[in-house]
Image (cartoon, rainbow over all chains, first blue to last red; front, side, top):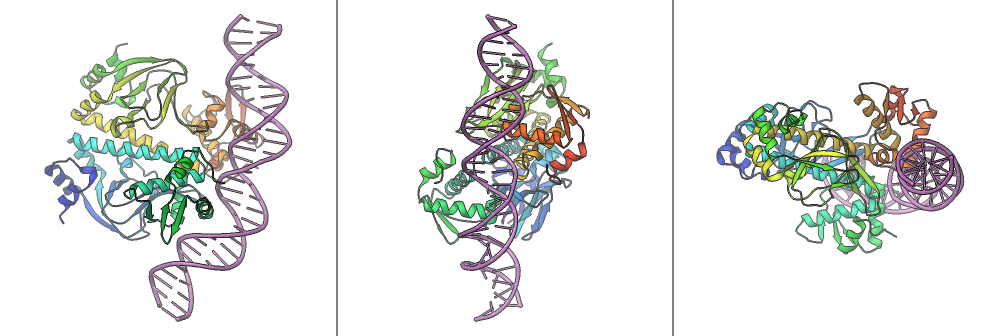
Length: 228
Length: 228
DNA sequence: GTTGCGCCTTGACTTAAGTCAAACTTCAAT
DNA sequence: ATTGAAGTTTGACTTAAGTCAAGGCGCAAC
């Protein structure tokens, strides 16, 4: 598959003309990262941004004593590192591949040149950044205003909605990663999952979780209910 | 002072030509909010964004049981509500005036039309959103990776740098607000301030704080030190 | 002044969640 | 199949920070 059609298939670039897509294709570089490889570390000089073609990437920060907070786990077609392109200078968090991950890389200079000539592209990026902001706002809300059971409930509901409103979905992250995403630790996560099972809110299979009581989880997520 | 010169003085619009500024002036509306008045509540339909001309505004969320997390406290020339303009639909948090606050209001439709014709403006907005993202990332890091003393230390250092590297600065927020900004409660804040005083890291006056040991605070903020 | 209302502080207590340590499960690699 | 490393669970314990309740401070309004 040639670069231009790959690019045309990326949601971020929806609505761009074939001509615009081929301009993007001209500046993009294909790169491959293997599991565990880092794209960049927090504080690195930012020279461009990435779009995932397949695989999985985590965006995270580490505390000095080693605790990890995962900001996002991103997959096919998700862009990352884009904020650093416009705010300049340094990546504010680190990015690491969780699997074999081919990406497209767009160098800052060339990409900004393109934007300067193309308001459609600019608007697409503005929408993207706004969405990111919204997601981060939700993360802050979760961390600060909810306790761990509430965060977990919200996360489960989100996953469930994502997978076509099925109430069973497969875990595509380890529980360690899930804990780091929820701002907690594996032990706590494990205990709370158990409490949810005890209260018949969910059921766990091998690598999967089934939601038994969506309403109950929603109440938990909104703070209207507590686990026994 | 006429609208065009007001706009030309706003950092967000730095680098725009006089012509561009007067186009902005043409779509901006001046509005006045008094202390305690809300601009919008979380979830409200978003119809535009604001720039503060004077006064003070807090951006915040409330948990169902009434706890408040303040995201930002904004002042003269700071824009807010801008993310909702591009992501569409709804404001993700609430905004309230903490003082008499005159603002400029830019309606979504007209502003987006302007951007569509003006890549310079688009780039300015991209930079703004990226900065916001960066600040929110730091907030997440603080909430999730630091304990309250560390967050407080980071906050104090930030305020101090802001006021021209003086080591004494005046509190322009109440301690209640400060607590909500740090993701904690007034009682906890009070106790930690006392511990910092005990350890001769800071000294408090009436409505002011003096930093005595910048290095010590920095160690605290970075998690290399603990309060006794 | 003095009244009253927010703001701030303090103390005693509770609790959610983290730490540490050990054991068990999975699964991939030899 | 065996090993080993990583992921996961469980239990006992610790701790940071929240809750509740009371009292003090400061300032504005009468």
